[in-house]
Length: 141
Image: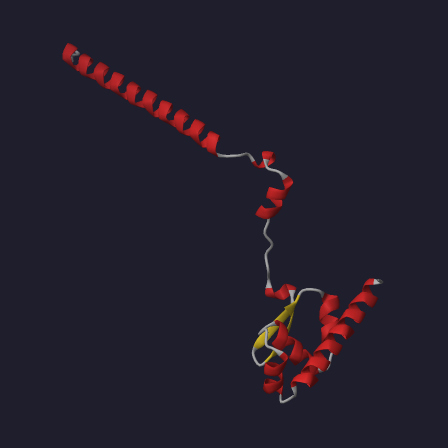
């Protein structure tokens, strides 16, 4: 079988076409990489303050001690804080949970617990002082 000169011309044109397409694809790729490099900043070049903003921490329920009142949960991450909170009487825990989780006023907490506003305020203040004293004593300060 003899090769037809016409077939050679078509193959040469197709070969040239393929080379041209590949050359332009390479040019487009290089251009895109240059544009991307001009828009992006390497992580090594970012200041430490910016790097700190990029950091995230995973929050797992098993990492906290959870105290509940009426279906509302107060998670405490510190074991010392959880131990100090656990030492409080149940009613004082309830007052603090209502205040810290639901952000209720002393009057609203008093209505929920059947206490007067002043009694709730007294117990809340006393409980916070007890917690502060326990945590300060455990830290050695």
